[in-house]
Image 1 (tube, helix red, strand yellow):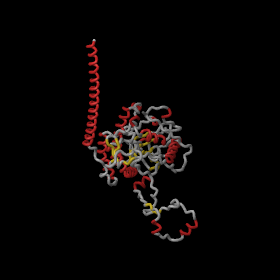
Image 2 (tube, rainbow, N blue to C red):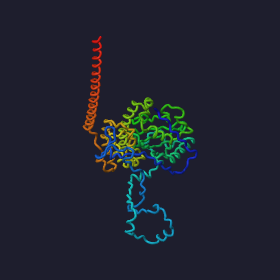
Image 3 (cartoon, rainbow, N blue to C red):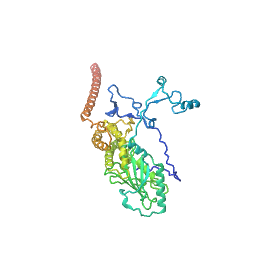
Image 4 (cartoon, rainbow, N blue to C red):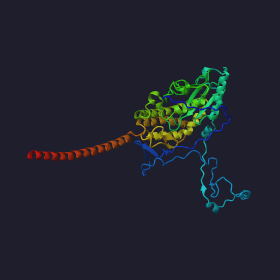
Length: 462
């Protein structure tokens, strides 16, 4: 079904501040995918001494942010009397001690608890992504899909210029972390955006590019948007020709509140709608004909197989983006996949082991209890097969130690063994059932024979 519009009320007077709000620390609990694998739809420990583990509390991943990232690579002495980094209650004593050189006392230091600090050195790619501006302007867009729609000397109305500049300001201040935009200074009618696929969806770790054009009658009409598909259709709303089907763009019918409102709608609203409502957890139900089957066994089964196919197409989109990164985002694409390479391999290995598609978050698997069914054998095989191509492209970026970590395709022999086990258990259940039925019939026949004997005795008496 066509997704509803995400309504974001733009500020009346956009602020010039570029300070970002801190993200919430609420992250779902995860289970480390390196220590577990899925077999027959269940989570099984790789440790031979352990059986089924507590899914909620076992193997939680370390959360974001190290407290010691800014420190030098040395041993740090932790104070047991005062919080580390805070001054002592005696300021005079602190001043006196600061005037003398520090002498290390081995006997005294041995009584103090010490914390070994592991310094994480950020890669050049991580530094680039950290400093990469969410919104910025560029000189030209010669390779833009809508480059032929106008030229740099074209004059636009005052209303048009004012609205585009307002959109720029909103994007500069309020873009979420997963969306980045480049606008053209010489061609204000052109813009390019990249959206990073969210965790918990079949689009996780992928990057998806959109070219945007503001027509002459903007904002009376919505912008024009083209998706960089690479010839792949990864969503009912994203065609392989690049068409984006959305009520907000006027490419799909919707009620009045779902369509473009010249006085209210913004580019930020449009991009967030694509991110949250198109690239979602179950894209199968974006198709209007299938939306009504959501929640039914048949609908959920079809949704599962559709999402599996979407992830395989997302892997192909990764390769397409690495080989042909869009202009002004070349280094962003290379750095993004360099940093996400090991996460992509871990997630794909979990899928090869049978984890349901979309159940992966950084470092582990979430919603284990709700995901009782494992991935299909076809999906697991396709992921293992195409991941070889993905790894080849990641190695070209300079990523190390990926070949050894990639798991091979699932063994059909082990699958047959599990099927044999299931068939043996089924036969045993059948034998038990037959034994019970036969026993019941024997008891019933004895009772029946007794009734016949009693009836015949009465007949002879008469």
